[in-house]
Image 1 (cartoon, one colour):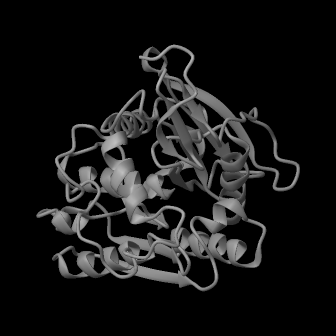
Image 2: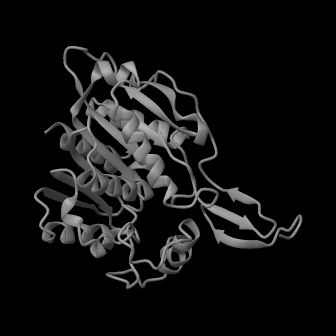
Length: 313
């Protein structure tokens, strides 16, 4: 380790820089905002520890004027950030989940899992599963007990959070989790990949290009053998048909490097023997996780409405 070195060992801009002296500089998602009553939507939020020993926690959300006599769907949300940055407590995700909760009229749990490289994969997956077990106990919190319908549970996430969402649904399909009936999942520009490029993955005009992801994946998961492991490339999962829900909504953006993988996910899931319905929505003129970055835009708001419809139909 080189003392006081500004030389960069790993450059994953615009997300993170890792210096030769061991310093890790996160470039986004550093701000933390407190839970609140959102003045625009009336959505309430509060924070709870899931496992203080390993610093896994969550932000819970309750829509305006909930009715105890009419329980609401429960949305478990996993934030994006390449497994490297962001949190459930950043201003970006506070605003995004507030908008989702208001639009869909759901109770939500936004999970704050630990990040690589300090906590390499599969730690994010194990933290997320721990959060689902915590939710499934139903004795965790009065908001969940009083307002959430555990027979209408949905998982959702963007980018890396979309990847986590898929992997959690896959695990629910093969490993019994009493207390949760998983109705569906929503994948917003999900982070899937593979060793061999498909579609436009060979193009070099994307910020998160093939070269970028070829470097990123071994960095966040040093134990991986290659980019075709089933957790990142569902096409290589021989048990994909075991996905533990009956409906899936996949969103992709026209200008996103990950668009073709999202489209391919719909194709392979449809052909896997899985007994469910998968819907793919491609949004023209938009880039990666546009609805998270710009929830008030025309397309961002339209996507929130689509997710709300998917949950409540």
